Image (tube, rainbow, N blue to C red; front, top):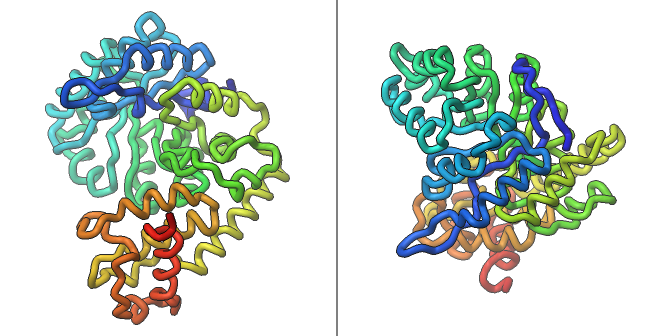
Amino acid sequence: MIYKTLGKTGIQVSALGFGAMRLPMIERGNGKIVDEDKAIPLIHRALDLGINYVDTAPGYCDRQSEAVVGKAIKGRRDSIYLSTKNPIEDASGDNWRRRLENSLTQLDTDYIDFYHMWGINLHTFENKVDVPGGPMEAAWRAKDEGLIRHISFSFHDEPGNIFKIIDSGYFETVLLQYNLLDQSLTAGMEHAYNKGMGVVVMGPVGGGRLGAPSEAIRSMLGHVRSTAEMALRFVIANPYATVALSGMSDLTMLEENAAVASIPGGLTEEERIRVADMLEENKRLADLYCTGCNYCMPCPVDVNIPRVFQLMNYSRVYGLHDYAKQEYRKLADGDIKNGRNADVCVECGSCEEKCPQDIHIIHQLRETSAALGVAAG
């Protein structure tokens, strides 16, 4: 297992982290419960393979993940670094403290190594976290008491908004999304690293997108066995990424990922250049189809045009055909939140009037419907 130094903390952590958000579940009554007979040995095997960073959260696995992780690390607590999160529901430091105490109880531990302000954006940070009597002040007190060792945050916002949170100097590590298909936070990662922060990456396999077979991605390095291996190696090789956090639900996935995280040397300079060149070419091809500027929206019949074209690019440019078709069909008619797919386009032309790239949107929506829709099989 490769180990890296987690920023100014000086802690040596495994390049692969165990994300306890996808523990094996079983049906029980009217719902699901974590299958502890599989989940606990899975975590034990991860630790045996050298993984020493374990991440959970109060809401994972129908709110059962923390308790199961607590059982799994019993007797091995001092050999691992435990990460969990506090949902910023309001600006009350007292309420933040109650949620912390609940996590300590669920995890059955006296302290948490990396405790995150969970999924914050700049607005939340300024208006709910960094306020008098708020969560930030409560976090400092909890750290002084030894209940948490390091104060962290996980980020979900526009890429440019991460810099002000980093520059506050309040946090020692950050958890953010970065993968082959989403590199929008690359500059933020570098900035955090240069400020001495540890950078933990979530979604290294793109939330499952990059687990699907794709010869276009696998061939970026001729000697990798799978798309997932290529994706994981890409993240681990990034000098600004300390931990690649992967949600692993079975032993096969765990063993394969651990093997990748044990390959010494990461990517050579030649390999990095090759991957960068291929990604740049893929981006150029994708931009020919749609740059994702959103000027075409809203659509009178709620077609989610940017998402539809994104899925088409996953199929056409990156070779993720099955994933693209599956996600395309999830765009249900009348779903206000996610919009609709291209099958319902009435060819009114309002989108083409607004497109600054002069893309032939109607024609490309027809193409997408034929490629990814029901008729595509």
